[in-house]
Length: 468
Image 1 (spheres, rainbow, N blue to C red):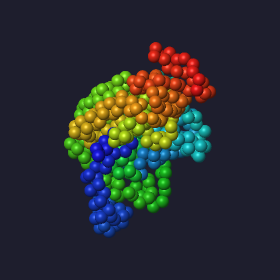
Image 2: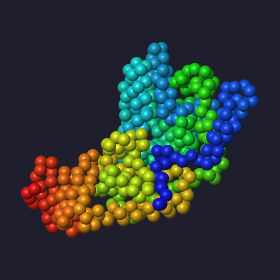
Image 3: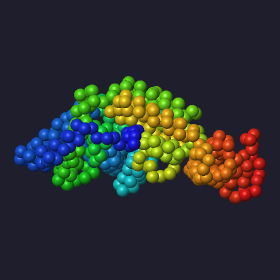
Image 4: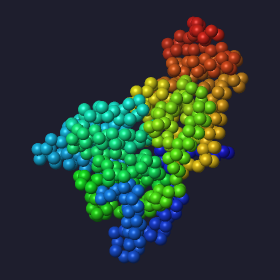
């Protein structure tokens, strides 16, 4: 059986072997509590301190805070809580600090949900205001210019998890400075680590959360950067760990593993370069074009991470594509893994103004910076075989059967036998595809609608009424 080909690295990534070794060593030989003063605890403390120093260098944190968290969601919660507590205090002191919580329309749901949650719990009474994006998925700076004077907090992301769209962070910073905005600015950097240059201390960014499992560290470990001088309120209080800024015994296995990933980033040869990843992306795109004529890419390559492809195939639903890829052992997704259970068009692609067949039929392929040429060779070959399989009609085998067709959030069925096939409630966007499948298989097609009225597809492509 052919091995799985994992093309869903934006959802999570396999753990780097050196990170596994570091985690095991931390659990076996350096298992002490870093708050303990004896030798065993001091060995754990050394891992903690070494990893933090590495994180500072990799992130360009300067004098800012670098805190270890359980992941990006905790970091986002902490940043939002810190900013809104500061806003509430400034308003109580009579300062004018804005009445809007501005967030990118394509942000991860953890951001908008956190804003709504803490706004309600803290009683700050601010209005949530989505910031629209253009068709490339980049924030509308012209709209931000109008909103910035009223913004209490602005939340954007460095790169989008579904499309890979890279934000114009310098442009956003210029708008905030030109407007004289005092808004706190959080940038979700989850997809940026190891893929985009980071020099956080030399930016206007106040808060930047990271998640280790997106870059070959285990799940359950993350980082929150807080700019020097930005307000900070701990999300968790207790034993005073992290210098009283994030209580709870540290996840030492996760921190040690993250330290190994950061060391690999500093060392510079473990992960592929941007140019190497861009060449791999171009090869995957070429294979997809060969496999699926008419395929569209939902974000322009010049403004996206080289690790991410978001595609749609005319007349083919995302479910059909996912089933096809999954049967071939190619692991991809229809968007954010956190929203995978919700059968709905992508809100990210909807916000970009793409038509329903693209937002509802989208599939994301994403690779990590550990990918090599052998992996890309195998992926391209498997993708082309998927295209061959899609063009081979399941109706052409001569055996009776049933086939589900999906599109635009609707589902229908094709029942076929003895030279005839019946399409029952086919989604409108799938009718042409079904007719083509029937013609290729030499079958006579009868199409039933929801009211039990039927039509027969004629050879000239028109339809004529028939009786059930």
